[in-house]
Length: 153
Image (tube, rainbow, N blue to C red):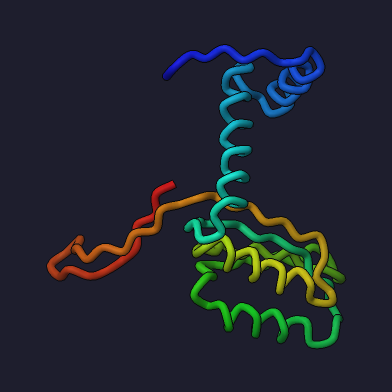
């Protein structure tokens, strides 16, 4: 690790200390590293929409909204290349929490998330994107070689 010197306004130092305390960081340095990683990830995402990534997309769907389940299933089916896994948890009689794990290009994942989030009856969506190098290699873990993906973050 390299040591660098950064000059911050007093108000910004207070904010960093508050984040460090609230999130339980060991100190300012760890908080600053995490904040920098997040900022750099966001900058990279905006600069390169073709960047490969993995993401978690979470939203709440209202129960009883006409054809919502069918519309959501159709969107996911059209983009089956992105969706890795999904979990649905009933929150109460009126809403279900959905979490979709996806992988692909940032631009595709953003478009997919927008298409889901704008469906009538979907509310409180959140998308968390992590840049990742997705490689397909052909090697075996047993007697026969087979192609599969490796994801490096």
